[in-house]
Length: 257
Image (cartoon, rainbow, N blue to C red):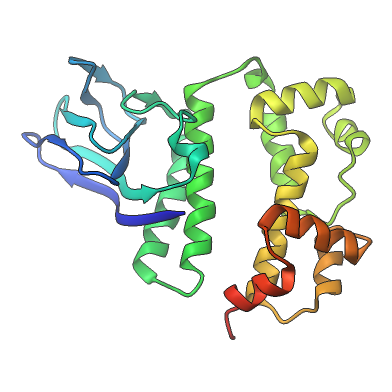
């Protein structure tokens, strides 16, 4: 679970601004710099280009300042108990160049908005947005041989999440990206750190949770909209993935409209 403490987008600080502190227990912070910045890394100052990101863990020293002129950056301070992200999935205190900066910044904007609005769906939305941000940080920090296929794989991932109802078998996915199933499985695992089929299940669970929380559709209808031909199979997979039945999930998260 993520608890957002502060979320600021494109904050502007004067040229003489310096941040030099140690965060308290339970406080993580991630930053995305729009302008050139100097960041202390392992006791040495490092000049970093615009579009550099960094994540600090609790108790870690933070020291940075603008290289020249105003400092423009977005930052999110948060608490997190999700082991995937706190146990080495992303490097802490290491500057990371963010290639698709403008696109990446959109997710930060959405986190800031959700944290400001405090809607009933806030926890669900922020959790998913923060997971996307962390996955992207990981991909930027640990590029793989699949990088040259990134555009194709990103498009496939987008299609999977946009249309979880499609018949996403390996053969169909491989034909869509003009690869063999073996190549696709390897490259996709390198790129996304999950298998193609696991990604399909995630997309379907994401759609299912949204429909359970935001609509009054019955379970059978939601099952079909998420790509399942058999409602019993949907219920089993949902329970395995979410540790509760679709009905119980709806009782806890449904938002009256």
